[in-house]
Image (cartoon, rainbow, N blue to C red; front, top):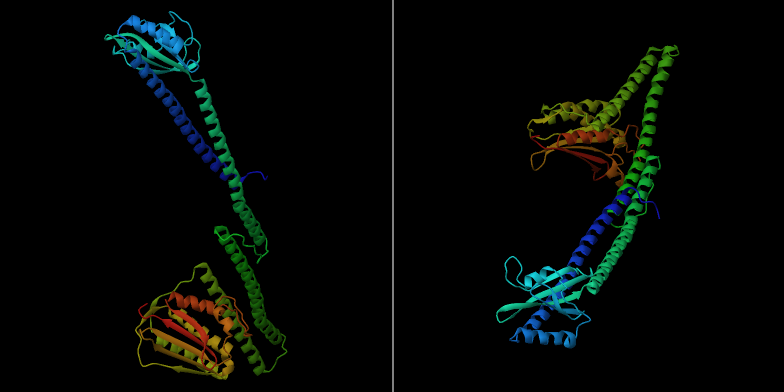
Length: 474
C-alpha cells in the first residue's frame, strides 16, 4: 500500500479520529447502560426477596419463636444457597445465622446493616442496598439489608448477599464484544476511506500530472473522464483549458508568422527603393517621386500596423481609455465616408452613403475612437470585398430611436463556418488579404465601451454586411 501523505494522511487522520471518538463514546455509553441495567436488575431482585422474607418472618409473635424457625429455615429450607447468602444480623451488627457458613459474632460492618438497624444519622431503620468488596473475602458483592420488626421493635436485620463475579464477567464480555464491534466498524471506515480516497486522489494525481505536461509544452493533451461528478467537471475543465491553450498557441504562432510577413513586405519595399535612390540608380525625377511615394505609403502602412498592435496591447492590459465628449455621430460617419470616397474611387470602388432626414441627439463618445472604427470597417470592406467594386454605407434610427449604421460590400462574403470567429483576435480565416487580423477585435472593444454592438454577417444577394448599433443617451 502506498505511504499515506498529503491529502490521504489528512483525510485518514481526521476521519479515523472522528470514528474512534464516536466509537469510544458509544462503547462508554453502552457500558454504563449495561452496568446500570444488570446492577439495577440484581438490586430489584434482592429487594423483592428481602421484602418477601420480612413479610414471612413478621408473622411470628415472639423473638424466640422467630429465631427458632429462622434457624430451621436458613439451614434446612432455604433453596438458593448456591446463589445467595441469607443472613440474620443482630442489633449489635453481628451475624447470628448464615446460609453460607457457621458464624457467631462476625460483624460485616457495611453501611446497609447500619441503615437497616437504625444506626444511620436519621435513626430510622430503612432497607438499603450496598455494592462493594466483602470485608472478609475481598470479593465484589451486592447486599441488601432490611429491618425485621416484632412487637414494634427492630429485633434484627435480614440480609441477602450475592456475589457479582458472574455479573461482572458478563458485563466485561459484553463490553469486550462492543469494543470488538467498534474496532470492526473503525476498520470498515478505514477501508472505505482508502477506497474513497483512491477515487479522489488518483484522479487528482492524474490531473496534476496532466497539468505539469501542459506546463511543459504538451498543449492539447486530453484526459479520460471516468467520473460524472465534481472530479469529472475538473477533468472537463482541464481538457477544455488544454485545448484552448493549444488553440491559443496555434493562433499566436500564426499571428507571429502573419505579422512577420506583413512587416517584412513593406520593409522590403522601403529598403529596396531607399537603396535604389541612394545609389543613384534612378535618375528620372518622376521615378524618384514614384519611389518616394512608395516609401511614404509603405511607411504609413507600417505605422498603422504598429498603432493597431499598440491599441490591442492597451486593450489586453486594461489601459484602453476613452476621452468622452459630446459627439455628432452622423457628422463623424460623413467625415469618414468623405475621406475614403476619393481614395476608393482611385481603386475603382464606388462608395455610396445613404443619409436619413432625422437628426440624432448629441451622444457622449470618443470621436477619435469612433472615427477609428468607421475607417477600419471601411478599409476592411475594401480589402475583403473590394472585388465587388461597390461599398454602401447608411445611417438611420431604429424603432427605439437609437443609431444604426450599416456598411456593406459586394464581395464574396464570409463562409458560414467562419462567421462566429471573424471578430476573434488573430483569426485569419480563408481570406488572403493582408493585415494583422486584430482590427475587428479592436473595433468591437471600442463599440462595446460605447455601450453599443457590432454584428457581422452576409447580406442578401452577396457580400458582407456590418451593423453598428449605438444607444442614444450614452
